[in-house]
Image (tube, rainbow, N blue to C red; front, side, top):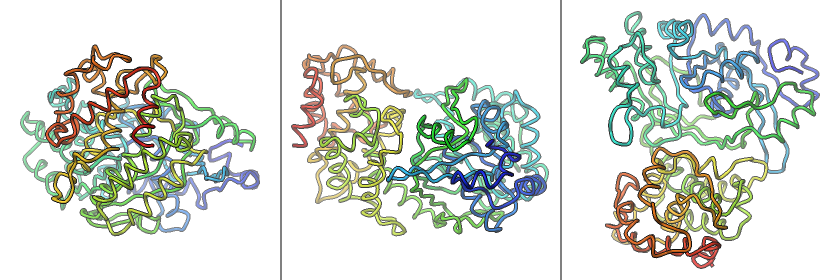
Length: 537
C-alpha cells in the first residue's frame, strides 16, 4: 500500500490494516483550495501534520468545510521535496496509546506544500497569489520560537535580517520578512482583513509574531519600500489580527518501532529521513493522543468552525491563563526537570524516567507542592485534572518515544517561563517566600550541572543545541567534577541574570541554595543520584 491519492483508492486494503481513510475526495478538496484558499500554514513539520492538519481533516470529513490547508516551509525545503511531494502531501498519523495499541489515520487535508524561499520563486509567487485572494482567512505558524527571532543574544539584528531590511519585500529570506512581503501583496490587491495566528508553544506567541512582523514593516517604511498606508493597515488589528494561542501535544521524532509496525501492515516507503537541515522526519507522525489548542477568537475575515474540531475558541485572557497553567506549572517545568536529569543519568526515554523513584518524586513535588499553590486557573480546563493527566498518563506512556535530549534543546530560552514565573509568583505573595522553594532550585541546579557536559558517571556527554550554550559553558569554565571548590564565584553572575531566569535568583534568596545544590551535584561520579536521594528521600 502506498501513501498517495492513487494508493488509497484501494480502501479495503487500508481498512483491513486498521488505518482510517479520509471521508472526502482529495482531488475535490485540492480544487476547492486552489479556487478559494482559506488557510495557509507556515512550518510543515510534525506538530502541524499530526495535530493542526487533523483539525481541518475532521471538518472536511463532516462536510463543514470544502477546502484544505496550503503548507509552506521557510526553513527546511527537503520536507516539501521528500516528505510532501512524493506522498501527495498526505501523512500517516499514528496515535500511541498507553496500552501499547496504535490508532492510525491517513491525513489528507493538506492541498499542497510550498517552499517559501527566494531560491524557489515559483513557490513564492504561488503564495503571493494565495495572499492576494480575498478568500484567505488565516495564516498560522509552527516555526518554533526561534523562527520569530530577528536579533542575536547581544540584541543585534542577524546579518540576514539586516539584508532583508536593505533589500526590501522583493528579495527577502527570513520567515518574518516573507510574511510581511505577502501581507504587502494582499494590501496592494484586495486589502481584505486576515488573521496571522501563531500556534507555537511559547508565551504570548501572537504578541511575539506581531512584534517581529511590525519590525520588518517599520524598517521597510524607513527605507522607502512601503507606504504609510500599508504600515497603518498591518498595525490595525481590525485588518490584520494576531490572535494568541496555547498548543499542547507531545509529538516526538518518528520511531523505528512505528515504522516497522506500518511495514508489517503493508504500508510502503515509511522510512524516516534526516534532511540537509538535520530535521529527523518521516512520512508518518507518531504522537500521544491527548491534545489541546486554545485560540483567541479574533478572525476579521472569518474562520473555519474550529470549535467543532475540539479547539477552545475564547478570549485573550483565557488563552494567556491556559498557557501559563501549562507552561509555568502543569507540564513544561516537569518536562525540563526530567530532561536535564535524564541526560545526566543516562536515560533516553522520558517514560522510563517516570519509573525512576527520585525523578518521579521530583516532578511531582515541582508540580503539586510548588506549582499548584500559585497556578493560574484558566477556568476552561482544571489545572489539577490537567497535571494529573500529565503525571499519571502522558509522561509515563511507555509507547511515546520521547527523549530527554530532545526536551533539553534550547533550555536557556525556557527557564525564565518554566521556573521563573513560579518564583516571581512566590515573591509577589505576602504569605509565600521564594527562598523556601526546594525542588525548583534543584531543577535549576541540575540544569547548570548538565551544562558541564559530563554525566553522572563522569563520562563526556553531548549537550543539546542551545543559543546560549557556548556563553554559559564559558562562564562555567574551570568547574570540574570532583572539585566542588572549583565552583567558587562562578554561579553568582549566572544566577543574577534576570533575563535568563526571569528574576534575579540571588535577590530573591535562592542563589546560595542553588549554589549549595550545585556543589553537591559536582562532588564526584554518582553525586547527581546521591543529591536527588538526599533532597527527595
